[in-house]
Length: 398
Image (cartoon, rainbow, N blue to C red; front, side, top):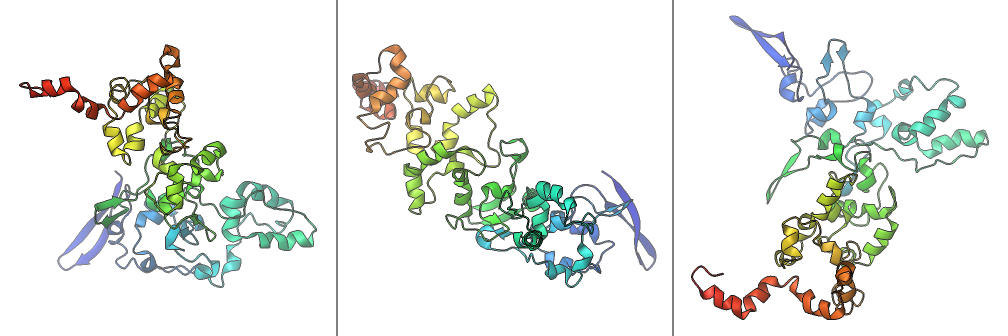
């Protein structure tokens, strides 16, 4: 840990030396020895006070100690836009995003160095192609482009909606373990972890959090975690059309559409920030064995009674050839068993069993009728079995 000592305050009879750590997390106590009133700043370039940001962690804007031998690092405007102009789900706009709010009448001084006098010609084309949503849209909207394009008779439309994209800027706050809230159930953490090694590591936060945008969002519900959970069905990242169509007709989707937000969404089963990559056999095996994590939270009784010897008991002992929940109950198009199209409907159960058992020649309808009800009723059937009852009466019997 780096540290340096500075002369601090002289008090009667002795001088006090204060050691300031310049590594690790940035917090207000590190600043107070030099900045007794750190709520105020004096910067002629913009209107800003630390006092207006006192409810936020210092590390949200200063991820590293700002005072270095080379000078003081100040947040860039991109850092400010981690919060400013952002619609934060149902909370609305976190902070003003109008340039004048902070820069007043000094806007002409903000012209970037690469905006040369011939910027309206060739020099802007490559930056616009590469940084349209990650930089240009921070200050500009499409109408700004049209002013010149119309005059020059240039036909142009942005290849993507011209809306600012902060990437993973949300981690300025949500990357901290100190981002917590008290609730009736205790302390709740809003720290995001696992993203760097997940299948979603290259995504921007608004790709899934579709109501956390820099334009007024129109989310399907008013509940942010439901909107994130069904964002996979939007088709914005990769092709989920087949799965989305299947899910749309499922009992889960019907419940969500009816306002039951406890029903499963894509995210409920697949996860979010730490969603696994399926690029190794070990990862595929782990997915196959994840029924408890995916299904048991909602279907606790069904998980507990999934205990017959060849299916549930073997599966719970991590047998890779034993069926997971979705081998019988399709993952996306889950239907109630009394639905004629359900894979577990009495009319279809034989075909469902045949998908695994046909190689043994024992998966006909008669086999299914005899065996299917045992899968989720093993304990009940054991309790009704006469031999089991007799044995349970013996000393040590169960």
